[in-house]
Amino acid sequence: MMYSVKGVQYQTLVNIPKNIGLGYSGRDGKVHLIDGEFLFYGSVDIQGENGPINKKTEIDANWTVKFNEIPCDSQGNILLKSYWLSPASNDSWLIKDKMRLMILCSKEPTHRLILETGEIIDNKVDNDYLRNMIFSYTILRR
Image (cartoon, rainbow, N blue to C red; front, side, top):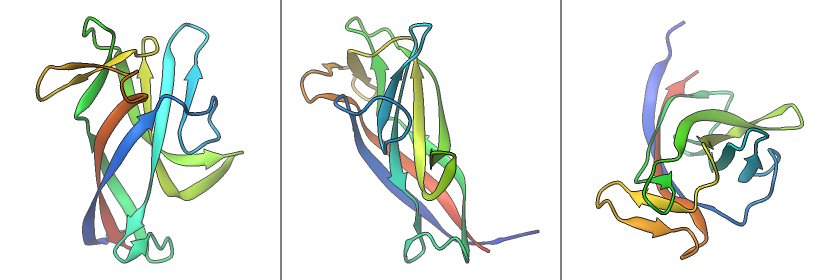
């Protein structure tokens, strides 16, 4: 089946704060993994052509994210191991109007590297893990 393109959306996830809850059930969250790795995530609302996506007539597809900063330690060593986009879910029920950005690091980041300037920012300055991630995705007509 072929769907026609209705448009493209761009959204910014302004920040993922450090003072987020533990676990997977929130809009934002963090998880300390047994092997010492650290997972944190933030969510954006999926917007359609005219406001919140209408799952009866629209499909979101082809998600990408652009990072302006990368998690690191105080020396600038990059801690990012992987990231992926996943529909937000809660108690096994799919929440169809949010997309999560999941970020896996080798350990909990204390700093972040500004990619454009090379500046290293201490996360204590503004209490954020990351800031200004730009999402883009396609809206298709169902």
